Image (cartoon, rainbow, N blue to C red; front, side, top):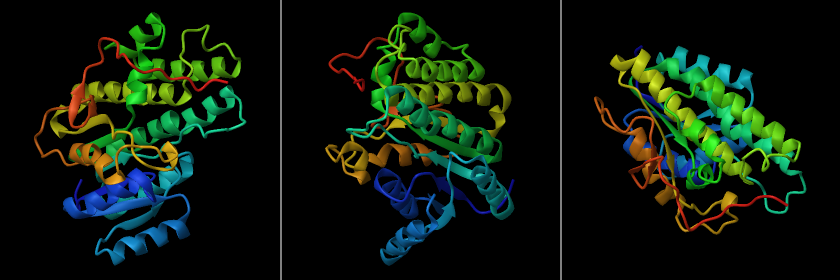
Length: 289
């Protein structure tokens, strides 16, 4: 694959995603694409950044729409011969006071945070150029929630032989059991957001193993990360980090130099790899009624 370097950031018209775009416009030697479901809104954001002296490009993209993903894929193949960096930042969280049932929230949130992000990975991973990078924006909430799962679920989610098909089946099972009101009895915690991020982190590990096995010569790295508790609409806005501070680790992973071998398939916080072993303490999560 040939062509100028290019990076795509999903969910990037505000908050953390926008801060990632701003940082990449300053530090990435290539074209930076800001994606938006709403093109007029995206165009306004691009105009604002241009007034700051930055030069992002705009792409219409709804990661929950397979047709939209395919159109984006075709764009990068035609214009660039592939993609250098994909940052999967798009995600949603339960809204405070949301009257929807826990099961309905599970279906909606996992559709975006896990299933649609998986679609992005699977569509764009084959397009990545040599030394390409995928960064999946996860959360420390997922790391904590993992250890609130039953021992059997923990063992499978952390195992080195879990397949992508098995992981997908587990995420579908969680949604079904959440809708039936039986998820706690089946060993799941009471956190839709947490489970969605567990799935994303486990998917990252699985796809890293696939890269090591099938495409070691291409030097592609895929990692997940926690940007920290960033002040945004999603944190209502009680975060402790600015979006610019939260962008540091995702951008660091996106710009790892060519021929870098590690981290690969890891969960990274403040540029440090977190080991999936032992139980975090001092925090609880409950999104239930």
